[in-house]
Length: 350
Image 1 (cartoon, rainbow, N blue to C red):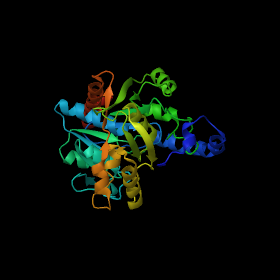
Image 2 (image 1 turned 60 degrees about the vertical axis):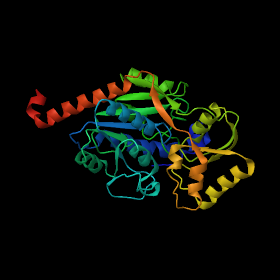
Image 3 (image 1 turned 90 degrees about the vertical axis):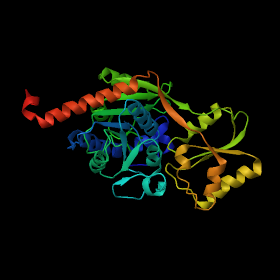
Image 4 (image 1 turned 120 degrees about the vertical axis):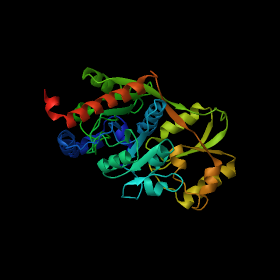
């Protein structure tokens, strides 16, 4: 999967997108039918998949965390399943934030592991079985909608209202992971994040197809005391402008913005440059939770950068507070029906 989205993917369609369209047509002819004919294995536990239509940056991970928190409030024990993108381990692993590094397991699994048991596995069916053996009673997948071979009981596709689906083209001419008709066919519902309008056309299309539409916003968990403070905002995420916009909304004086590739592992030179620029100019350093977990305290001046960087924490807040419960209820009901059919195939056919 493409990890870095070229800027032209997120602008109006231009000659680059049209030039790559033949390759996109081929990619779509492969990726769409592959979703339709996938032979999916199942586990007894209910499975919620949190995915998105495009490459990176929609808000899957904080959405998965919001659902897990709702599940815990109901007395459930949720567990997260991730491929561990950006990590080097290729064996099924229970993530332990105290011992694992982002270089080993990926940055997003480290964030998820702060909220609940998290397993990384390149083969998600094996990962789901490991979670079941660890005693969880609800599996929440972070990504994997287009490619997983695991049966979902509820698939929630997150779409950012500011970026939408970009130019609407399939990879490599645009950011869309598979033809929209195929993706909508397998989606249980959509979650629109934010109140801008770039996602509205797709939301209307999903609504016409009978898909429930949920709405939420990204809320910062911060006192807002950066007003007029000169800062260097640094981020290695799929959509750094989203973070920079949050810092501006806090009233900070955004003196410098430093963007790095998504899942980027910082070199000693990059770390030193951030620290030295901040010290020389009296700037405050601010970053994201996803970036801070990729810093390794024993790596050069990484511990100093961790100490001197302020992390802007965020969470997903649903417009309708009952929405997470509705999603969880639908997944639990689907799993019960699926398991009943598996145990009593003759009765389920009647």
